[in-house]
Image 1 (cartoon, rainbow, N blue to C red):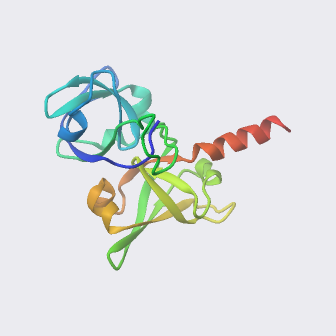
Image 2 (spheres, rainbow, N blue to C red):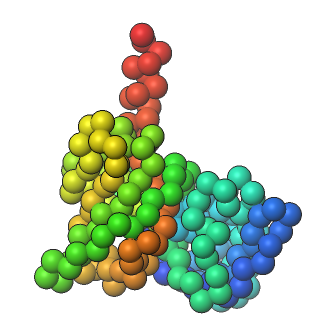
Length: 202
């Protein structure tokens, strides 16, 4: 389990195809310092397994299912990625419950500077809109954020908005996102559980 608190921004050294998937060589000295082969690491919000260590980073692979359902296919050598190690049992819980299981891919629709911060609107798949609520939680590229606005119920176009403080802009990949960029979206798992339990009681 993760919390959506990015601990390092890594850089993609190489992307190579596998049998329908992709292999990523990622430079991330802080993340790799105490990592072991088999560890889970969230890469732009996608829970992947470290299959090799390179001294200055690690290697991980995304299977076809993961490539199809996330924005990882957009990565290339030189791309930057948000990284997070799993929450330690005795660790501080700072963000919200993040599984590293991406629910869909959104597209940046608008970026508006507001002083030192940015307000970003992201178009999201219509089937995810019901899990979003103003002041609720969402993970965007693995970053735990608070929703400042959401599209109205039954709207034809579904979107979310978040406000990014200077620290987030400087310490995650979200600071470089521009209109048209695709981002990984993980909605609040508690909303999905609540929906499922309600359905089972009908």
